[in-house]
Length: 111
Image: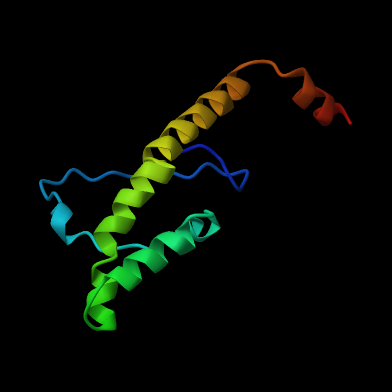
């Protein structure tokens, strides 16, 4: 499947292989999102969770995972779904531009 061009003039290709293997959601590793640090409430949120926790640093860090996931959903929503929708829209726009006459592109070719 051709994916929309985003950072290049080349279309990436997605190859999907049929598989009966489905990953276990409980084993998905935690991923820190850098965008969290840009949110004005992030520092206070983490500080409050950290100070209310008990035990050593590893235990406190582990106890941040679930609340951060919930906070992420409440504040940012499902970014992967939003990204999929935006990429699909870009693909549709690019496909339409490829199949229709575009006076702007024609003027570039004549120059």
